[in-house]
Image (tube, rainbow, N blue to C red; front, side):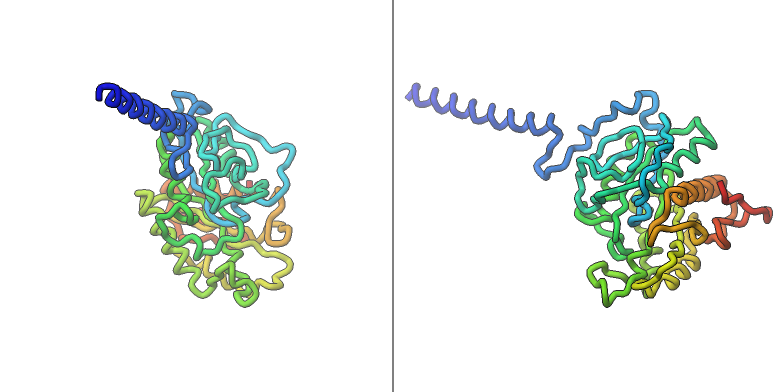
Length: 321
């Protein structure tokens, strides 16, 4: 009996040791039962101790023109003051492509390839204005996504839920300071020809405003600055019968603590922009974000060939870099 009891004790000890060993291995390899990396394993080493918690975080949402589709310029600058919370859930010094699919965790927003877009010019413009700030970019955009794809959902298998999860995972490094949004092309297409893209031009403005309200509420900042880009003006609108309608709805939107920038005056390559155009768009995003942060009186939209919000004293904000 004593021998049998001893054998049972030894067997249970070995079993417990095996289970504990596997559990520790999975933990230190950064893998949970769901396949995600636990937040505790997100490496902050690229950000020095004195900077941790001080980043101004900006969430990048939309479709391909937020991802960026231009060839990466050879002369693009980087900055030690700009970081990206990558699709791999790791912090890194920001460099294009900001929305790189390398080691992507949430497959729902994978963009391969991703190129040069407005994100880096936006961040570099903020730093040029004030190099005492530290910027953190959180890419969430997905090429081809419609406004319907961005409606509220808690699941990280949706664009909304995945982006919300990223924002929460990145938040310990700083304060969420604004949202950049560039989307609408997918809702301008012919729904008879491309039903799988779920275009909804008729309800675009309503769904857009609902998204802005829900996402900011879920972040816990109902007044979070929200800057969005109006669609540009391609030379060929074949297959895009609702392009003008989407542009008009974007212009008519009134988003609290939000502002629209225009892009219709900038050169395009199909429905995407050139690298030089993305530089200007990034600059305009930054101008609008600074303006909201300054507490100026906003009309909620921009008119003319560039973002020209009215200042409280009737002056106009410069829009060209």
